[in-house]
Image 1 (cartoon, helix red, strand yellow):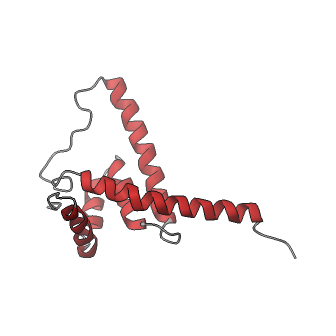
Image 2 (image 1 turned 135 degrees about the vertical axis):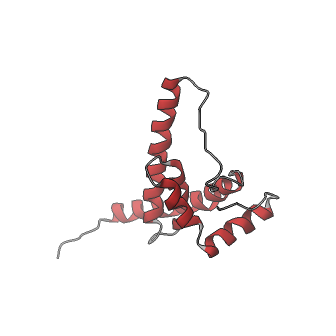
Image 3 (image 1 turned 60 degrees about the vertical axis):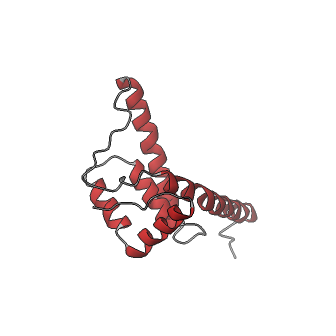
Amino acid sequence: MEVLLSKDLLLSLFVLSVVTFVVSLVGIPFLLVRLPPHYFDERHPRTWMEDHHPVLRLIGLVFKNAVGILLFMAGVAMIVLPGQGVLTMLIGVSLLDFPGKRQLERRLIGQRALLRTINKLRAKFGRPPLVVA
């Protein structure tokens, strides 16, 4: 009988699961607490690195989108692996730049249970609730 997964691969997957779980437990709340309350408000324009040199802005945008893709893919993986999948996907999407991004963000954050959980976390750290409009 053929072995589909070696012990080394299984050990690597286990370590990856533990690392993503720990990083998501610490990193995702860290980011969510630091978001401005109006981040998901359609009426508030987002400006990012607007006053910087165009080359720095381009490098920043490429880096930000690469991190967003990685976080979104990690969030998808966390749907079946341990971790905070939906929150990780939300952070990943918020870092990406694509048409319809704000609609998708509002749809994700508009889930009552998710918004309530995020706002409870923000309240623990003395931050105002997120405004979704």
